[in-house]
Length: 290
Image 1 (cartoon, rainbow, N blue to C red):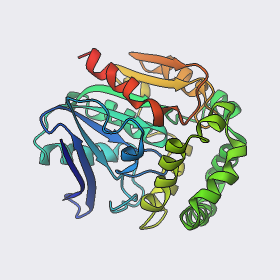
Image 2 (cartoon, rainbow, N blue to C red):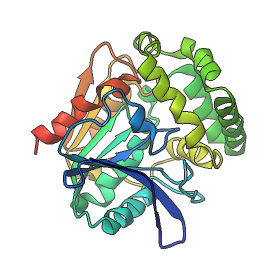
Image 3 (cartoon, rainbow, N blue to C red):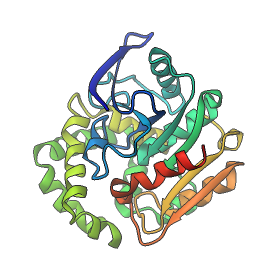
Image 4 (cartoon, rainbow, N blue to C red):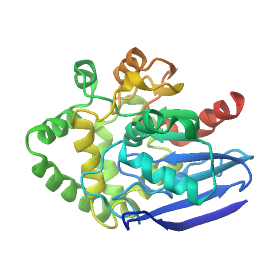
């Protein structure tokens, strides 16, 4: 087993992209794309870590998170170029990719832009285009944030800066304050120490160099997406907890309606935090389907 947590490559434009590797260095390669916020080490706090044998995990810091440099106005499709550069540097030809929450749109963009490099494409509790059904069933706080972003992105950037400072100053206090907004399933999940520890790990490392990446994610979701989901030719597997109010089931339904080869895996009695305890359930699908 290897555990290389602070590796970097320099991209063509001079930016630094940081990543971690763990698992079997000769195993099936899987890229892990964190959410909003998140970072390359987030996965190490999952109770099932180091997950399944026979798999090689490459977990990146998306631009503007952790130790990766921010790229101004980075789009969902831009990240695919960074991932190809990383895969090439590691001499990996093909790989599977898993994106969670706010990392989901970037993962779908990879399916659109670099299908020839991908084996399995999986998103869990992914954010999606803000179509009416999605907006209607999204939690109130997120709806407000999306509205602010649409009309005053500068104000949203300021809000994210303040939010990150609050999260970093006292993560435990922030989690206690946000608990009332969660779905019933997530209120139960967050009481479990492993889940809480994973959430607490998310904040300081993710925004140690600022909140630009965090803010850009919200801007990108709120704007028209720079690629057409209906043009994705790869099979896409969407794991959707049914009690998720952060990224509600309406997202999965919309993706199913527009992506030609989209498979939905609904998870009953589960919320947005389900992925923290059950990533191996998803990984087994990667192995089972070859």
